[in-house]
Image (cartoon, rainbow, N blue to C red; front, side):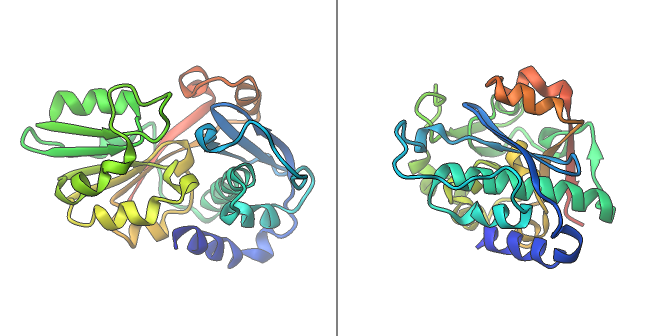
Amino acid sequence: MIVDELLNLVGERRRRLEDLTLSRVCVSLCYTAVMLDNSYVGLCHTPIEDIGHSHWGRRRDFHGFKALEIARLANSFDMIERTVGIATLNALSQHLMDSEGYERQFGMDAFDAMDVRREDSVAVVGYIRPLVGKLRENAREVHVFERNPWLRGDALPDTFVDSILPKADVVVISGSSLINGTIDRLLELSKNAKFVALAGPTASTLPEPFFERGVKVMAGIRAKGPAVLNAVAEAKPFVAFKELVEKYIMKKD
């Protein structure tokens, strides 16, 4: 499973990461953000459609705990714990990518890396609206899938992906698929596509497990500083704090 592989990759760098702790955690309506005590920030989509309004029992604490310990919650069946765990994985990933010199092209997004042609059939899992608008201007057809009924609009429920993804030429998958546990299945369904991308703030993680499964481009973000946590705490959408982050892409060699 991809989440397990990400945890293993982070665990291999344990000596460099074991002293890092969480200094701030914001779980909000649109996004969840964590900041490590070295000021690195990780963001993650908050799956409000899968989080109950009443929380039974006592959830564990996050602030001040070891980042490696909290990152393991990325496999939790408690959706808030899982969301904080993946945001922590993203914060650790940004730290590692900076310190280890991963090649990223800043100022670019997934569309900038695509070769979409008029005859192409495109599938987008997760309604990334600005991207979908551009794709509809360039492709023969664009099928959009969205799990959250409040965000769905003219998209299809994601339960229909099995009939479309195996036939798509281009597939773009939102990083939120890491949250709802569908990423492995979606990539398996997309193995016939000529181009597969993972995109969005939640996709800001180490790329190796995705590249090994056919993803050509990872399109994520790096926070410019802690101010983005204030925006997340105020439940602002991405468009309202995009100046506080840097978009980037990573391409498979």
